[in-house]
Each structure stands twice: as C-alpha cells, then as structure tokens.
Image (cartoon, rainbow, N blue to C red; front, side, top):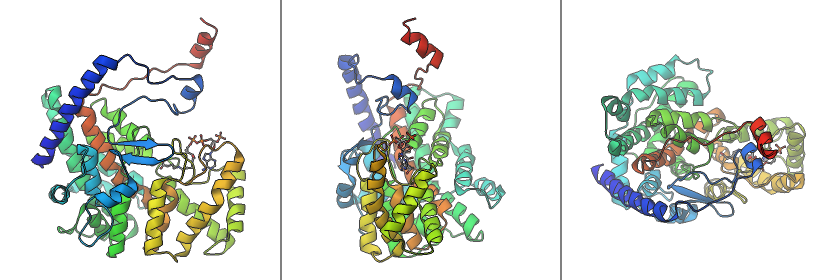
Length: 435
Ligand code: CMX
C-alpha cells in the first residue's frame, strides 16, 4: 500500500503546486455568471467546485480522468478469463490519474482483502434493525458504526498538523472501501436470505467477493458486478452523493461520516433510489397488464398514465446529461452479450424505444434519454436478484470508489470548508429594487 500512497502523495504535491501557480496568475478570472433562476432551481449549471476524479460532458457522458467508459473497458485490467474491468482499476485511475498495470490492480485487491475485517459491533447494529427496515437504512447505520475505526478522527483528537490530514483520510478510505462488500452482503443476507451469511473468499477480487458473499456463484454475475462497480463509481462532483460527501468532508469530518452522509443522499428517489423505482415500476406495469413482455403500445399507454398521475418516469432524464447515458449503453451491451432473450431486459429496451419521444413531446423535460438506473435492475433480476430495494446499496458500494478518491484529493489539496452565500426572497426583492 505504501507504494500507492507514495505515488498519490507525489501526484497531489505536484497538482497542489500547479494549482497555486494557476490561482496566482488567473485567480481573479470569472468562470461564469449566476442568474436568479439558478439559485432557485437547484444551482443547475453553476460551476462551483473542483472534483479531480471525473468530468461529465452533457453530450458525451462521463469521462474518468479523460477516459470514456468504452475506452476503460478496453484499457483497465480484467480478472483472469474475464472481459469486464476490475473496479480496483478505476479507483486507481481516479486516485492516481493514470491507467494502472495488472500489478497495481492486484496490489489493491490484496490490500482490500487484508483490510476487509468488519468489527462485530457493526453486525450487531445491522441485526438490531427490524427486518422490514430499508437496506439503505441498515447500510448507512453500519457505515456510521464503523466510524469507531477512524484513524483520522483519533489522530485529529490527539492533534495533527494540517499537512498530514490527507494520510489519515487515505488510510480510512482504504479501510472503508475494503469493508463495504462484507457489510453490503451482510445486509442482503440478513434481510433476504434468512440471516445465513457467507464468508469472504480470500482468492477473489473486490467485486467478485461481493457477488460471492451475496450468494451468487455464476461467473457472468461476477462479471456484471465488476462492470456495475466500475460504471457507478463516479459522475463528477455536483451530484447529490458526491457533493454531500465532499461538503461534509470540508468540515473535516472523517471518511465514515462523510460517506454515510453521501449515502443518505444516494437513498433519495431522484438520485440512487431510482434504480429500485425503475424495476418496481416495470413489475407494476407487467402486473397491471398481466404480461411478462408488454407491447410498445401498452408501454406508451402506461407511461402516459404515469405522467398523468403527476409522477416521473424513473430512469429517464438527467440534470446534466443530454443524451443516452453511456452507462446505460454499457449495460445494454452486457445484456446483448449475456441475456439477449430475457423478456425483462427486452422490455427495458422497448421502453428505451418508447419513452424518449413521449418525454420530448412534454416540451419541458431537458433530457428525454435513459440514465444509468434505467437498465441496471433488469440485469440483476436476470440472475435472480429480485429484491429491488437492495439495488441502491450496490450503487453505494460502487460510489465509494469515486467519492472517497475525491475526498483524498480534497484533503491533499487543502480545500477550504464550504460555505456558499444564501439569500432570502425578501433580500432578493430588496436587491431588485436597488435597495
Ligand atoms: N419523467 C417525467 N418528468 C420529468 C422527467 C421524467 N423522467 N425528468 C424530468 N422531468 C420533468 C421535471 O420533473 C420537471 O418538471 P416540472 O417543471 O413540472 O417540475 C421538468 O421535467 C424539467 O426537469 P429537468 O430540468 O429536465 O430535470 P431536472 O434537472 O430538474 O431533474 C432528474 C433531473 C434526474 C431529477 C429528473 O430527470 C427525474 O426526476 N428523473 C427521474 C428520476 C431518475 O431517474 N433519477 C436518477 C438520475 C440518475 C441518478 O442520479 O442516479
């Protein structure tokens, strides 16, 4: 681990020096303007923070350190005999800024295996919930329970130089990422599999082990988990889970507190919970229509009914993207390869043909195209994972890679506590009158 930590330190020091010079020369330049509408409408389009790990282009989709998802599917190391990238690789890329070698990825796999021990009290916390509790609630509570292990919190209490913050944040982030598959699998098996748990397999990679501990042994499910964990990892800095983690971190909360906060945001239906909403919505559609594969006409009618009842079509639309999400496309390719005849997967594709023109016709939806959540559930159901309330936990395990790599950068670059200005409508009215 020391090798990766040293590499990160060298990269962050060089970046820090570059940013210092950049601000010295250009610090007073304007990067944008803010309209009154924007501050009332979710700050959409306001450039207001730096996130080094990935950048979202409205037309092209996400790029991780400059690389698109199809490029990463080519370039990142794979498991032996596998076709999909190992998520260890995308974490390395986001943290260090370079495509990792096979050895770099193997090193991360073995470090995360070694650090994956979860203290018993964390399981006690999960066990204390009624079985009816939402898996995201158990997941977040377990993350909070693990905060007892924070190196940063302990060191800060003793007193540390601010130049050393990043090192503790780095160690906590590694521990937390290493532990998440065990925690997620425990939540899954507690809630859905009679509390019968499966021990980690010391020979498996991070995502493979998650699949194994959840109880799925099909090798193509391992591949799905590797792809899933790679493509959900990061989506630049302004989305709710990334921004929350970053914001909470700016007050020097440790990575456990920051990540738990971010996960509370991911649990909202307009963000990460949309993946469960999509499958719930399709299951309800099939039940109402009494068919496993509704026709395009039936889908169109169902979509119109959804809209008429004042609901959103889950899995469609995006605050920044203005085309089909490449994460949707990557999952569609996976579906074509592994399960082209699955009726649920085909329904997802029929919805893709049907929904965009309907949303476009509304005239107000800025992006009628599918996002990542429109596809993920159908792939999971194919392997028998019907428990859709659990899907956001999987999203969360993956999201840790991006938001925690970012948190390491935040502290290494010494970013300040976030404190944007807010106004009241009365103060806006006074400002408009020139008072
Ligand atoms: N179905 C119906 N209406 C939609 C819609 C959809 N899928 N997407 C947007 N709209 C509506 C909005 O509700 C809004 O309506 P009002 O003016 O009546 O309030 C109008 O279109 C304009 O919204 P927008 O500017 O296009 O979208 P926003 O940036 O405000 O919101 C998002 C983006 C994702 C919250 C929204 O598209 C949505 O609710 N989609 C469905 C939920 C979803 O799939 N979320 C997952 C996003 C990905 C993720 O974070 O995981």
